[in-house]
Amino acid sequence: MADEPTLDIDRHLRYWTMCLRSPLPHHYLSSDGNRMALAYFMINSVAILTPPGSGKPSPIPASDRRSLRRWVLSLQQPGGGFAGSPTLALPPGPDGVQAVDASVANLPATLFALQLLALLADDDDDDDDDNDGAAAAFDGVDRARTLRWLRRLQRPDGSFGEALKHLPGRGWFVGGGYDMRYCYIAAAVRWILRGDVQEGEPGWVDDFDTHALARYILSSQTYDGGFAGSSQEEPHAGYAYCAIGALALLDRPISGHPRPGGTLVASIRDRPGLIRWLASRQFVYLEPPEPQEDDDDDDDNDDEDNFRLPQRLSDLSLTENLRHVACNGRTNKVADTCYTWWVGGALANLGLGAELGGGVADGEAPGVLLDRAGARRFLLERMAHRIGGFSKHPGGPPDVYHACFGLAALAVLGEPGLSEFDSGLAVPARTVRVMERARAALVERDRARDRASEGDGTKRPAELAGEAVALGLAMAGKKPAWLSER
Image (cartoon, one colour):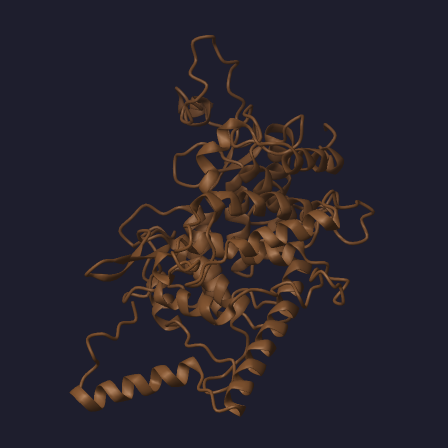
């Protein structure tokens, strides 16, 4: 039997160092509005590759961490949330202040920003004057305003949009389409920032409707067990991860170990069908023939050998060519690096981490649901690039998105030498501990601010809003037209 491939951590660190210190190739120009996402892919990957005690120093010096932190905070919007890039930031008005209704914040950028602030913190130094300590990771984040902005992104059916837009004469509009990714991101931002503040206590911010969100997600399971934007659409592995992840985060305690397979996850209508659908995303990857000169290298659907039926039934074999096991995102689609992560992470969030082969020693049987050995060989022999990183398809160039989630897939499968990975929040477990400490400090500051407001007679925003509603009801007998949650 051929030797098993190994993950060259030093080579991958060199790739990420190059990405951080050099301009990205011109192919990334179309992603200029998503710089926050690109930064997350880079910083998260470095954290995965440099677990505590590994002896691998981070290629990001403290001065760069401070600069990146300032950059992230500079993209926080006055109406709440974060923008994805400084190229999207709107100029201030005549008075030097940007209007609240001119916000360009969006949900994905907001989650990436919070993840980055935690990833950039030093969880071993809480007394750093430059705010690099874990407890100070969220210093500068407007928790209350961000949570209020998040609440306004929820639609009446429980789903979430991506961004808010103020339309003259029509009020606020929730844009971004119906996308399960926004539901997951909303649940993640809520978990990161809310804490355990109870209604009526200092630091309380009105919550979004978690029951409506759960109902929307649970109603989006398809006939074959997967998840989509609705029960009538085609299921997708990324959507399945987001649906399961959102339900798990709504159930997750604010600190300590998560509860995979909690109450909401257990309420999935067809849980066996979902597990079967996820496991069915695996297929045996067959090597395609050498490309001809007139082949179109940009065609994502030219992998004919992996879909060609045998001429005779007797030619069909289940025992040959089983070395590489790939994952796709939808039925009858080609292999793609990131889907090993979306499938593996979804199964882990269902509470089936043991069946992924995580921590399986050499010589032991692979996981039951996901062929860990075959998937690992596929990633390391067919997708890992000679300069580091991972490509989307075999033979392609590396890119930061697939390079990040290739590492995440290996981490969730228990690859030695990588950081312990949190499948629910898509960051190393130590970064989640930073989030918990940073949130506690942020909540305590909000509580202290509200207590101070009570002490000097200043009314809190929630109290003022409640009195305004009461006044409107008393005057007209119904909610005043000028008052809108949108």
